[in-house]
Length: 622
Image (spheres, rainbow, N blue to C red):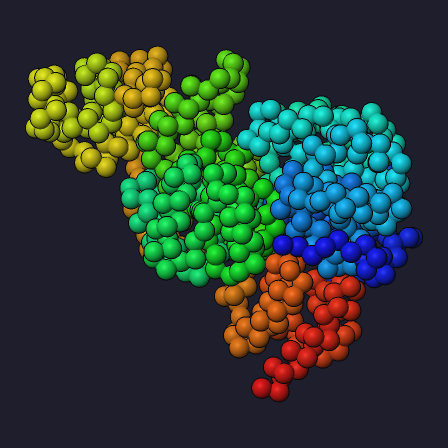
């Protein structure tokens, strides 16, 4: 799947790093002219031997925060990463840059692992990626003590949080690094952590004295949109066809069965859609992930088992067909869109059954009261984002302690503001109907009673004689579903904990029944056709939409694809789309001119410079 780790070849091509500044490494190795906001501060802190806790949004350049110091400091940087796919991707990308990088994980046989360990012990590596479960083994710790270590980088550090959505028990033991290697700098990085989780990361990883670097959480290129679920499959198809035809995307579902069914449905409609979940054979999962990384226009349909650390830059949309359990999960998953900074969409449909299902799962969990209370707060925050009438981005950022002073203009509530209406009377009718029917029925039946349905079930139950029968004829079935959804979302009704879907009153609804509070409800907006993907004004249009020379664009992409296939790596490991676009715009004719293209470092210039100059020359002759 990935090329063998040839350490002799790497050593022969390794650029010297001694005495170079972070700025020199950034330019010569990675091909960039300047650091992004906060990157420079973080890199200088770690390069000079300081510890750091870094919160930076997905696509913000977290990897450079430890990769650059690793090439400035002497010795080998140890990177703790939770996923094999992430390790392999990053090692492949670094090796393309001429960096001596390797990994240790369970995919390797004894000889491969021994060769990697020998390379570490003899100082032949700049970076070594390692899974947390392997790092904490006594044998590995002994190996590290005998090696020259420059720094420890703990990626996806939110996995240490027992309240987080990606908790991994092996991360809890990483505090051993502070005790065993007190003089070696450590940097912990994550894209997702509220204040509670940040504090927990610092305490559990012994980083309370470290400098904390908190970048803004805003991803202005992502447009956030949430709609009521009516016909999820049709809504998804309409969304992809109208706005993302031919684009790469991720569709998240809560269950494995739904993943399989959705992937099959999309495939039948002509899309390259592949399933990914823990129930698939590992070879199938690996194959589908490889196709997603290497091919254009692939849609992966997945449970939350997919995505952590995926570096694919051109994911144009992330769709949710089910409600995530928390804003942390939602932000982490939607953050996989638009890593290249170009316009992308975070699209979701959700309905009453999503709320009921998640609340039932929470109450039926084995957690203690404190755990359930924290999880309720997280779910309430997620529901609050769904039902909000003001700017969604402001609500999302505020949850993570970030602020946006003015509405973003690039979410559905900004582009198509929802109306509110006085739902006091409707709410009283709905709650009374739940009470009069004995708190034993689900929403469909309750709406039948409210709208005076004459179906057999209502008549047999005798509920055609209760006082709430037929008193809600003024609202449609869809409007009543919206009322009940908002009552459950806001905690006035709860789902039967036994799992039968019946709605029950909570203590919180008492003032509403008594008419002591006025209730404003969100009117579900009718989405306008024109309210599609829009740029925030700060990121420009997607690369493919900026191209005017389509023949030249496809020629450079074909050149990149051929090289990627030969190397056994995804195309973006050779060059990102933005680099190809810059080549197409500048049409460099010499190696010096090509070196000025963003993303072309010294190693790639040497390996691919003549090849791409020849391709560009052919374009000029055409």
